[in-house]
Length: 402
Image 1 (tube, rainbow, N blue to C red):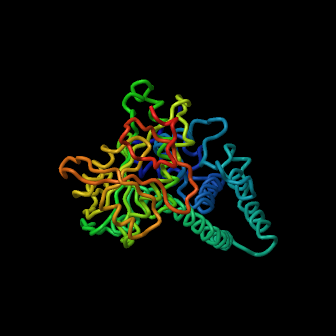
Image 2: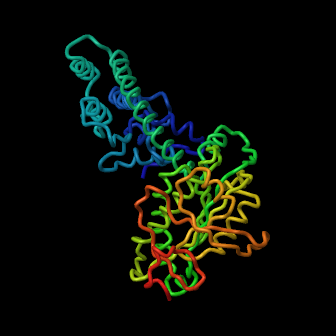
């Protein structure tokens, strides 16, 4: 191994030797920087051409320390250690560089030979190396514009993906404010309609299933629900376990149509239970229980990490009570929501009667059974109470009595 230089003089001194031919580096009497040979100059010229051609330093694409680079150049490796040409086309410029920094000095071309090769590169025209490099830089600039345009399109595509992910987490209008760096203040809404649903018997079903089966079940169910609600002017607030929460009328006001959007969506989701199948329990029908209510509420973004758009107010609590006091495969509607639906018209509602709602006392509630013009099939419900008036006499089915 050749170690003749005082590497303790620092990396800048070692880097200054990158242009020196290996045979000169190995000569003990070459410690004086003034010595050199014509063949050594050809080697240096090859390194310079590499710098211009690749627009980098002599070993710019190498992760080795300067000392390690110099030692490998001096150590007669096979093939000789030289600047990295990986990824470069095997063209005339590469061949010129490799000839100039060849290991055997006698096989390196003379400067007159190099001059003839440069002339041939220019198709016989008089062109010096600088002109040739300028021409190459012009071609590179044209290519760079194409590259920048391509990268810009890729960046726009990635930004679009990021925005779509953000819009799935937050309402679009709220997300745009956050992207602009603005603080999103909580807003009060005079009238919205909220939807709550859960799965009756989910606790028992989960206890009889593996964790992965539960995940698959909920993923299948909510993927189906998410596809359905895309057809309505609603915003999915959140899912917690088997609970699914949706709202209409915010963050963009839609008049009184919030009740209609939620009601039609609820009927659509309930109808999907006639065809939905549990992968690991295909013989069991999933029993969805739904509650909807209309009223005022406040909404705002909570948190900085994984921010959530949350709803607050008594309307949220009453909707939850409507769901928990409902029955499987039915849509339980409050008096307030029923009043809005009556204004809109076209919905089939059946009075349930007076029931006790925690925090509200005795209230009259209703079942939503469909709307005029809909041909969607709803699941048959179980009638386990003689006083249950869900079905009218003309639609009562004896097979449903348990």
